[in-house]
Image (cartoon, rainbow, N blue to C red; front, side, top):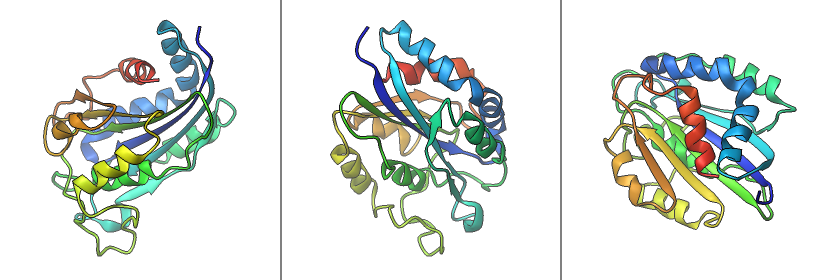
Length: 216
């Protein structure tokens, strides 16, 4: 087996109303996440030495800027699994209005995470959504609009290309719509299509964990 990786995972989680199925599954499975990931990684002859997890939950700045974005710090797993569980249980799927949502702003925040440093590291950003995303800048006048969000999708792609190229991986569970479908051309990006408006109900948590493990 290869040397163990230090793994940071950021979940960009759409928490609009239709997403209750996957939000509920994450709440139920968060405590078992370290064990699930370790087992799935071992199948691919990989080992996880250190694991940290955080989330960036989002809705829609155009619909309601006050609840459009919520982020956590990194939690070290499994030692802080209980704290992560508490944070995840505070998330409620609701609101968002009509699609599209503010997924690109959440992605910009995720890219700016306080990533682990050193050798044998993996930085994974996992988007979980059943909706398209607004162009960057929609809702920029809101007080809580993230200052890290660039002006255009091309600018966001440049941030991704320049960030830790040897370590970073992007995994999109998202519909084959704008902008997600076009992001398969980005470096180290995998797109797993989701059904629009279905809350990722077609995917069991095990399938999501397996896809993450494959990117380590």
